[in-house]
Image (cartoon, rainbow, N blue to C red):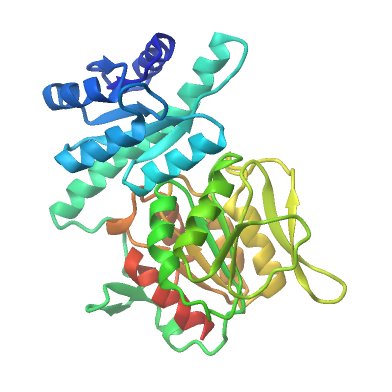
Length: 358
């Protein structure tokens, strides 16, 4: 179901969905109040929800959906503004599946193409999520974990025996995350203590403006300092540096051996900018075995090649498990590539990170 206060966008989104296989639009609404009544009667699996609407906006609508226990997934439709990004992030924290931003091209066909390119993979990821949840409910294994033989039944964590015996201590933590990331990060990062002792560098797939709002939101929740990274700043312990949306981020070591952030306009990788692989390669180069790589919820395979380089240098690698991922894409890719040492549920990732830095 399409929920938007403008006739034009309701029409465009309906046409976009008609081009995506396995999707049928069952209705539309021009504000949240009407949407709620139609959700209860039409029972859609998925809705697009405009952030800015009269009578009842997207955030209040989502809050009401959760309050009423309506079983529907939500993709927020946002604008590239500070206010739009803040509301969208709050929606993601409240459990929205994902978000897209409204394109603003001169030609209608360009807007249509941009929306189709943005929505199609998210719908596909949502369908995959339904399949995984169905498999989990039936008790099936979602991924082959036989290579990770050290299984702690109490903690529900899989580990390679070599990691359990590891002596090297990490001096940096690198994290890659995408769909479901804001919610996952707001759960995991506050579990890390102020005295962590090492810096964290992080790529969350997001457009410009959104990453700054994410950093501000997480900074209010965490003992660690969280900020959007700036070009040429020296990285310090107990600070989380988030790659700016629309840019690439890597770390480099200067002549005085100090490590600093380098923000570039290099091309996208895996259709992502910022890209996890781009960051992870630089961590592998500068820190070798003294690093921890973490891959969390998200669609696609960004991060797998970067983790491969980190693993080859002796770093410890951690992946979020299928059960707690909003989209089990990036972790699945890395696990199946054989480059993961530890598979852990969301609420255990922080403790696994701590073991590598302490």
